[in-house]
Length: 332
Image (cartoon, rainbow, N blue to C red; front, side, top):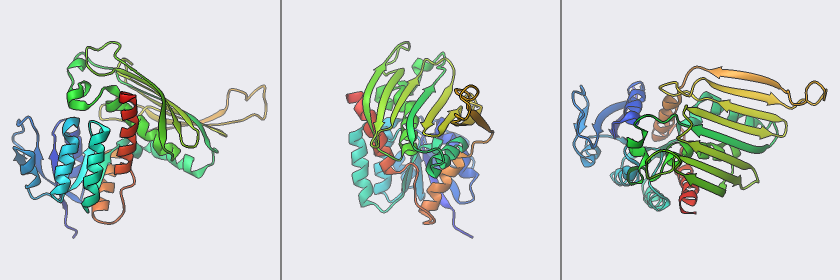
């Protein structure tokens, strides 16, 4: 019987709890310890509750999941790597590009697995879109258009994610970062910012509540992103136009199902009868009812540790390139 990988979690908010559930559902891993800066975790049967991050590192773990404030992510990643631990770090990977460069420097000197949490790549609609793109059955991509919106909440302005001291930025860092990663993932090319506009339109916060971006890939594909905290509903929409048709990814499953349903619409160009088909192409719509993204992310991480495969999603290169884009927006 294979020895289970012993895991500690740093940060026990929403993401820490989600990661715990996937770890405890795995037959390859065992949750050993938890550290949360609040110091308020109690009554965790069989789990060691650590008072400091150093105690977590020394709690007999092989790997550490980092689900803390973004301001601590790079520091914790570096300390864990230097201690010989494998690391899974949630997005955003760090506060700024300088911190990312320091992580890269340390990672090169350590023979350990480092993976970042871009779970959207493991949603079924995203995986199907990627399959279609890579098959080239729709031809080359012409453009992409993404909208990622939040409803906000009555206490939205109190959330730590909206304050640069803790998060490094606003809605772009929190949510838009996923769409930036998907632009890179689908195009298989590097991206650059052509134009950006970030603004605080409504919320009394020190970060942006709306971000408007135009990007261009190295092979000439233009993409646009609107990431918004004033959508007043949860919304995920990604449209991709090809030479032979289009894909529309509308909705994405989450724990609250507030972005549901998750669908992909496959549309084909059809000009056989210009009077009947023009502007009304044939469409095929697929609904997805299950979200196994957290499970699949964990499996990729554990398989890499066990040398069964490599990390191909959420690599350190993925993290660096998306932070380079965000850095260009915030400092452009």
